[in-house]
Image (cartoon, rainbow, N blue to C red; front, side, top):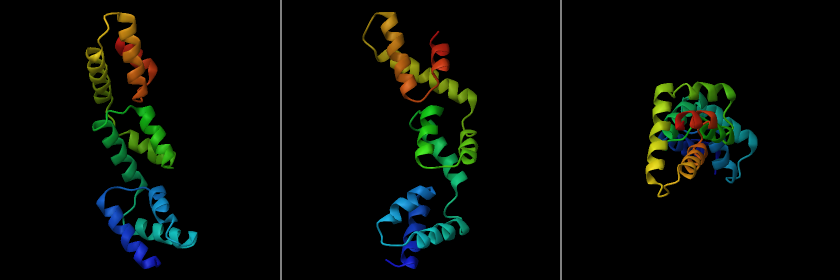
Amino acid sequence: MTQKQALGKMAKFCAYQERCQSEIKYKLFGTGLSNDEIDNIICDLIEHKFLDEERFAKAFVRGKFNQKGWGRIKIQQHLNRKQISSFCQKKGMLEINENDYLSKLEEIILEKSNSLQTEDQFIRKSKTARYAISRGFESELVWEVLD
């Protein structure tokens, strides 16, 4: 694959949905292109506004919070895996409204608590807390809402 062909493919890939640089590098890794050629492709994509890390971080945070109901911790971990800079991560996290965050947490806690069959309040509370924490919400906040 030539550099020009790869650039065209990656432009289509980025036009379909927001992407980050690490996804592009991963996609181009097995094409036989050199690291310099891959870096040139990424620079061209950034220059032509196909690739924007800040825009990606904002879209990622909005999507994972609104669609999947993830908390800040889980979103942050996944942004780190995608090698997004801390500046872009902070910009992306600003997409979460504090009131929406608390109402989403309350919704998740209520839904989980109602789905449990046990009558024992201690077990119900601990299972609900573990579930909310596993969704990426801060443990202090989870326990505060549960109490």
